[in-house]
Length: 217
Image (cartoon, rainbow, N blue to C red):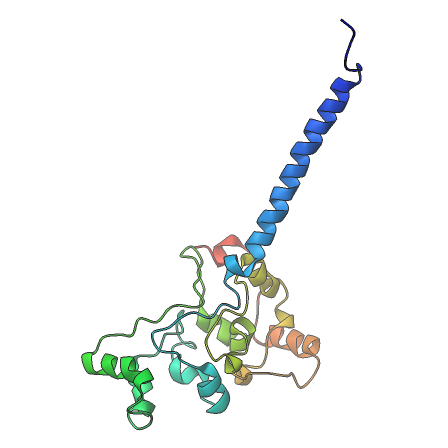
C-alpha cells in the first residue's frame, strides 16, 4: 500500500498540535484578563440600587455638605461609617417632611431600625483597609471614590484591584494633597503635583508600603 502521508507530516502535526494548545491558552489568558478588568467583574460605573435614592450630586454638589458630616468616623476609624438615620433627620425633620421618597428614612427613625443600605465600595474580607490612616497621609476622598459631587446615584469609580492600590503605594507623591483639601471635590494643586507631592511625602512621613501584610492581615 503506497504511503499516504509524507514522513515530514509527523513533525508538522506536532507543530500544529503545540501551536493550537498555545493559541488556545493565549486566547484563554486574554479573555480572562479582559473579563477581570471589565465592569462586570469590577462593578465600576455601576450605580447600586438603594432603599432610598440618595443623591450625592444634590447633597455634596449643590448643598455643599462636607463628607465628614455624614461619614463622621473617617478621620478616626478604619470605617467611614454610614450615617445613622438621626443624621438624615437633622435636616429632614424640617424639610421634605412629607416626601414619599423619604418615608423609609422616617420609618427608620420611628422604629429605630437601621436602613439596609447597599454597600458600594465592598472590599473582600481578606483585605484590610483603614480610612483614617489614608486621610492622615493626605489621600483625598475623590482619589478613591471619584467625583461623588457629580453622582446622582453612587457608583464605584475605580477598580479597587490590588494593582490599583499598589500604584498609589508605590508612587504616593502622585496622589497626596494637603490635609485641609481632603474632602475638596475637583481639587487642583496650587503648584505642580510632583513638587507638592514630594514635599508632603516627607512632611507626612509617608512610607511606600508594598509588603503583603500591609493589606492582608
